[in-house]
Image (cartoon, rainbow, N blue to C red; front, side, top):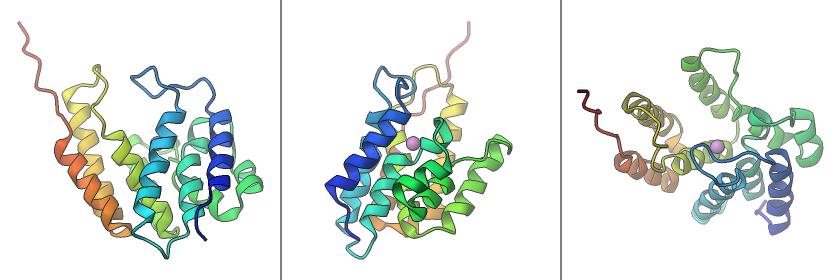
Length: 183
Ligand code: NI
């Protein structure tokens, strides 16, 4: 199924309401801008995947943080967007009962059990998040984030050649701050 403007708008409105008042960390921008960027990455990549379920990919992109970061639950996503989208969003949701280290491995494992469109969303999310890091991030945190991106690339890159290539470039360009000199 090809993605449709109606499907995009429905998911964006739903997510925008859910994330109301939230900002992109380290910026003054509404959280919706993060979602719109992930949706844009997916739509651009879909041009090279004519066989993909575009509606699934686009709606999962816009809703990918709804269960993790808002009051929205699985049932609400399912009743509005269907089971495939709800399962995709759930796979993209970290299990916060696990240790920080285990959360990504666990989510990647669950993403791999979903259609490849869900993996495309995870690649698009990390491409979007590899913008210059907030000023308060330490060198160690930036390095860990870059390493985590390497893991996403290695595990999910097969889902989309275009997105994998874009993520690789973003990883290489990611600015790691130099150690602050202490006096
Ligand atoms: Ni995200």
